[in-house]
Length: 277
Length: 216
Image (cartoon, rainbow over all chains, first blue to last red; front, side):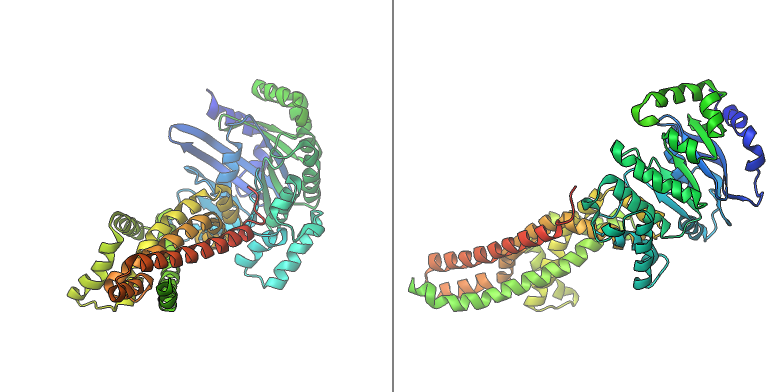
């Protein structure tokens, strides 16, 4: 396997935007490694996302996409590498007293949306959205509620505020989850296959909310196989395989004329899926 | 039959002590059990092995022996407790160990994504535990908590041997006077049964209420 060469080659076209400390990028990842026992899941990921940029990450299952997202906020602890979000930098090798404080700072600045929504089932929609502002931002209850109601309206669920997750459809739950993440006023939003657990007819409403956020200038990294979304919204599409970034480029370029055989083969497969277009 | 009637108010009064012992002990036991469970799930250094030994000892020795150690044993090292206090100490420690195992299973059954979501909101581990994980585990643990309470209610009869004036001891007192063990023990049994049945009904209500919004 030419894994490590793969990154170098793949990252080269984006090198201009990927230089460290260029002052423009909102999210910067370098040299991210992660292994589970003998299995190397991430073998050196370098990634930079500009302020307001939307990056779509694709790749076969097991390619490390989800692990990469989870490593960005240290839900999984990477084995090596460095992550910067806005002004906060965490190096895995940091052992200072405040490393946990910085991890929480990064989490505060990064909103995460999960494949299975992970809403709190014992709380209503509005309580789910209020939870972060109340507990972490220490916002007064009335203010948190106002914020939460506003965000629910933004994702089209003003009339569902007092419903429990079990009373909502998958698409509605995912939109509540997006509102919950937004309530922390993040600088970056990460989406881990946000529509893969949804019935096909519910995918559109979630993608529509995400598109609107992107248009409003939110910086986003989206792991998804929704080619249509990538074409409409992504500034850049990244193809991952075997724990490395194999290739990256503009959606139109990647989908019509990928350089790497692996990328072409994978895209050929997902284009044939009914839900893939 | 007339003896049953004439002794009823005496036994009923003593059964208040039974209820008191069980309610106070389950309250302490819940706190203790939750604490021990959280400490184990979070693998808190030092506290985790202590909790482990506590649970193992309490579950691996007879409750009667535990009662004797608290009431007859501890005075030897200068710790003297009255019968009721001793009873509550022994019963709480005992039921706490069983409850901690229920809580631990319940805590571990909460979907991992819940902790992920809470941490992603930048909560600390303990905030996530308190606000998200523990409340959900209560719901899962509710049926086993109920079962533990019913066991405890009956186990309070053991403290009659350290002279606590509860239901069984009251029955024994009347038997000593009347030599009618069958009547009195059946009467005591009936009262235990009514108490636990009443509690079972209450438990079903609470469980229905608690699971109203959760479909899993």
